[in-house]
Length: 552
Image (tube, rainbow, N blue to C red; front, side):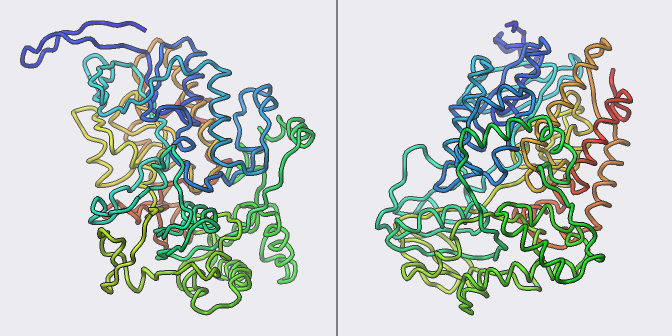
């Protein structure tokens, strides 16, 4: 690290200290920690910045009741160190947030990363200096930083839609957003609680706090297909068996459709009888994981008839659990005219549907009567009714993919604004760079496999490795700038869109398509061509000296 003093040229302002690095990393979650480690290994001066007061990213902020990941512990892992993999002992198949946060702190401490992370600091702007070929970066603390390379590890789901309804500040009770949950426990005992939203996050909250609340009103707008989670405990002996498979698992997750250790291995739908298909679906349903979604029949993403058959299989399971209550089934189970199983995010749950059978739980149909505003007493719906509550939990989602970067004032060549560009059209070069923004690299960004369609540790690590190898190549060539060409970006966007257009996903409305944010340009935010295919394309670029990237 060098600290240099630069004379500001504009308006004769006084000198101000500018801290200079080879690279700055935004974020200290799964990707940011690994990116910091890789760049330090390369001998680069680097510092990471994070708004949080500790490491974890998603697993720092999302500490709401019931938060846990839905990738199995054996594959939600770092793959660069066999010793690191074997030395941490997960307690169960799908560990909860506190354990995951401890794991990421364990990794950061083992690698001595925290000394190079500045916490409680938000990057507010990053402007590319075309004369110096460096990024001028500022923080909310007023610090000025300069770096040759800027790597954004901001997360796919890290820009919460916190100011969602008019009047939120007027509420007399307590109001919480799941993505901004406080560290101090929230007391739900005996309280009148409203939960707004029934996506994956809302489901986890609802099923977790149901035994505690005095009463609960659940505001439902979009029904969801759900899969019951099976979450056995892991003994030391069981974990040792997974550790023995480290190298096979490491290779496997890079090759499958979604970066898990399972894949679409059931064989072609058309070659099976109805009974044989049901056997496959039952087996994967009983696995209690996302395997029914990501390892059954890929035809359900393309063929409406297959989609409907698989969807009805899930609906039958859900109807049975809801005791065939017609009102609840209509409200909580997607109809054939809504969307097919797997075209939205599929949540895993634990006795979630049974919560609605409790006598102290009431559902509010937000399709019939949407939320109009928050009032001092609670939530007012369009029918004029005020639902009086003590606590409001907002599980209303995120500005996915593009939101985290759009909230930073990022300006590239010619002063172009990334926020303004993405407000017109969201586009990237493989989710790794954006044309017009030299030396800016991204992980978990739009048009790469990410939270929607990939086990995140698989995809984030692959992207970090590609970025790191690219930077090593640039430095070895004695060059200082790397930027995706317009032609390369155009070609990737075209391929991404053509691949997406073949699926049923683009015919739905969800955060996958950006349709949960008013005015957001419509485009599938995650690459749906498969993790294995994406990795192969990235590997080919590296093998052939990064064609399509202007290195100078």
